[in-house]
Image 1 (cartoon, rainbow, N blue to C red):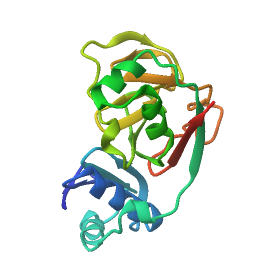
Image 2: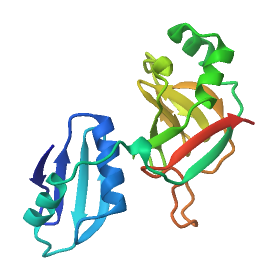
Image 3: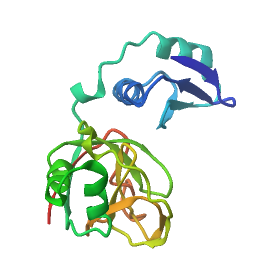
Image 4: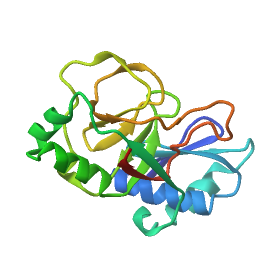
Length: 201
C-alpha cells in the first residue's frame, strides 16, 4: 500500500489488487480518517478526499497503519435486482464459459455481488463476485446503443446499464430496476460497497 498527495485536499492510496481496494474502502467507510469528506474507490486505488487544511500526512499515517479485514467479512446494504435473462449475448457467454445458458443464469443468480467501484456513466457500478466461471471478454465490437436496464458481463465484472448508452459488455438479461434517479437521495442505487443479489424476474 502506497500513498501520494492528490492536490491539496486528496490522498491517493495505491493498492496491489481489487480485493485490497474492497477491503480498504470498507474499512475507511466504517471509520473514516479525521477530515474525510469522500472516498472514491477504483480498480487499484482509493482516493480519500478531505476538508481544506486537513493534515494529509496525518491522514496518510492513519491509512498506512490499518490492516483491513476482507470486505466479504463485513456487512452492508443489499439490493435485490430482478432480471429477465434473455440477453442477446447469453449464448455467446455460454460458449465462452463452457456452461449451458441455464447454468450461466444459475451462476449469476447464485452468488452475492459487491459494487467495487463506479464509473463509465452515472449510476454504473462495477460488480464483482466469487464465482470466476463468469469471467468473459468484452465484445469484439461495441454496440452503439445498449438500452437502460441491460445486464452484462465483461472481464471479472457484472454491471447494469443505468441509461441508454454505447457499450461493449456481453448482455445476458434486462431489468426494470431504476438505478439512477436525480430526484432520489442518493441518486445511485449501486454505490461502492453495496451487495447485490440478482434473481429471475
